Image (cartoon, rainbow, N blue to C red; front, side, top):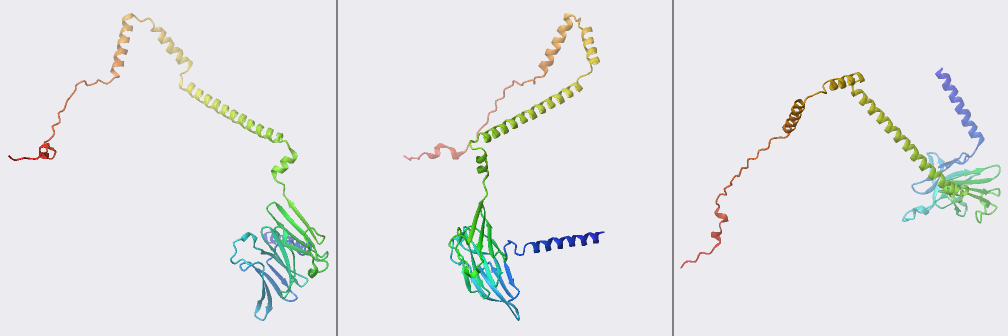
Length: 305
């Protein structure tokens, strides 16, 4: 049974993967490697050197034939403005790579030998990936930023060598910048005066206070009932209390001598509770031993006559 389930799982995975492959030939995912099977050429992003390395197959394997510097990084401190390679691909015997920094990006097209064919102007936005539609001849560029995402649609129907983009608002490049609305903006859109937000905040506070009051009152009642129950358990039964009261009433006719004796006994008992104080005062005289070091006579000058 386990073997059959494993085979079914493998078949389902194959169907899902193959469906994704045939549904989208070039997904919009950043790529660090690109291979052209006809010319046996490979383009690789060299992140440490900030370059695009072009490799060709030789008898000993692949060999770097050319390296394209994306942006110089040595001796610079404005790290946020340095362009870095984000994705690379090979379309129609052309190597295309996307470089981006914090605020803008650009694409560059070179042939398989590394010769420059086209370098686009800087696009406003932090793009990280691109994809090419072979049927419509459109190059799609996209990326996330701090407030939303940017999408560029570049028309490449005339070929990668004939792309002409004056600015991102021209017909050759459709540009869209989607900014995710903030929570404060959404609230302001539905509640411009802020009355609803104030009512919600105040009702939440009052509701919390009511809940806390109910909890404290319930806790106090539970504690009081527990103490009352414990006190009832320590008090004798009604029958025992009646018998004790009856005995007290039975001995209620006491004479004056008996009451005086009881009072004297109570008085003596209270006096015995105090400790007896010793009123003898002792004075101990402490004699100080004579020491010539403190004698004043040694400080006087002796004059002989």
